[in-house]
Image (cartoon, rainbow, N blue to C red; front, side, top):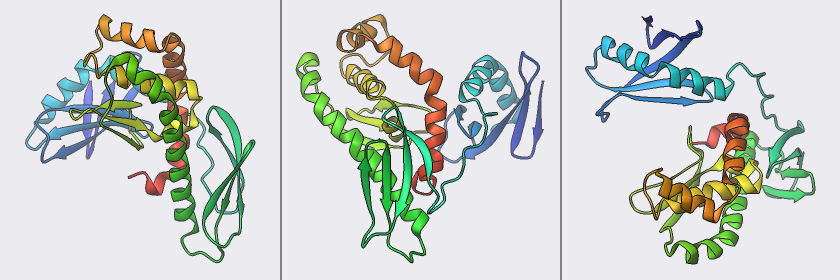
Amino acid sequence: MASEDGEWLELTAPGGSTIRVLKAAHPRARRLRLTVTPKGARLTYPNGTHVAQMTAFLRHHVDWLEQKLGEFNLDAEPLPPLRVGVPTTFPFRGEDVVLDWAEGPYPRVEQEPGQIVLQIPRPHTRALLVARGLLATHFEMQIRRDVSRWLPAYIPQISAAPTALRIRPLKSLWGSLDTRDRINLDLALALAPPAALRYVLVHELCHLKVRNHSPKFWHWVEALSPDYKEQRAWLRTNGSALKRQLDRLIADVAD
């Protein structure tokens, strides 16, 4: 059974739990679209859609919805907020590192084994926003460095190349290939082991050959990444935690 409460729809899952879904009309939406992120479930719908239609749509997808919400582990212990001057720990390239702070003549990132130091001039009225921007840039640069090392080996094997590489926070995906052959990668992959990032890159590169997830597509993936199943399983198990970490580290610059 589903019920409506303002901007939310409540749905009873097969297991007996109550699922709350945020509903949001979108002027350019042409169909119902259900997404799940570390922040919860969201239903986007065209203007004029009747609540009964939304409810039927949710009921049809309730098993998937319950599974995805479980993967994101939304009941997990809240992460400590990022605070200027307060050291914290987070994963980077699959290893825990300590984030520390220091004063400097200009904003910069210094990376040492097991440690990332943010140098920020003081006093600085926007120190937290500057820190988030530094981290976002540092994460993107690391992904670009990795990808630039791997691409020369893969392009000859598939006889195709992406037209561009875009790196940004993605709500639920790890990567995508658009109609212009541009690869999009999730910024949170900077926090994952390089092997997981490499698998996602291979996955999107193989879509240059096969646009669907048919057996032919997975044959290409396995040829380029023999351990892809292991990396895919790792992301499914740990992915929600990575996205939550990224959100707390760069929340103010994520858009």
